[in-house]
Length: 192
Image 1 (cartoon, rainbow, N blue to C red):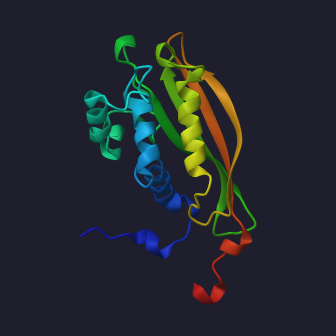
Image 2: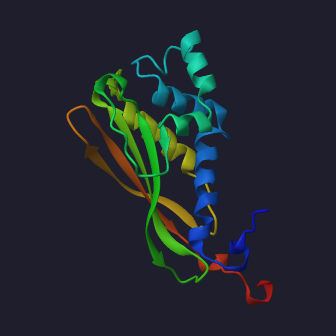
């Protein structure tokens, strides 16, 4: 029997797993119409990935792309470990990380930064009609996270985005969200 000793202590670091789960479910489970488009942008490296809705091959690729499958196949990552891909098997990826934890006015929670990095092979950026794969992915992520409320969080605000070039074949953007916890989230002394 596994005993969870964390129930007796309180730390905002222990809620990160719930927040990762909430973000992933929001992006890939709870909003099927948009999550299927996001999956197409990740797993189908063709310019018509979001336009060709009749392709059985594309439909099958989206159907097999469960959260578990996306993580096992390195389309969705929570750890910074980077596998090097040969150019012919490079894939688009989303990497989610929590950084820069700082003390807030509420001792139960810390403010922090959530970074969502999108990497795409440059050969697969263009989708036609001036659309670029990383911007489409960022647009769906940002739109889906607009109203999300994470553990103890008062606000989730996009504060910036920066371009990343890994090499001549691979690059993308990091979306930077500021999370600000409010004093309203404080656990009252009588409830402890």
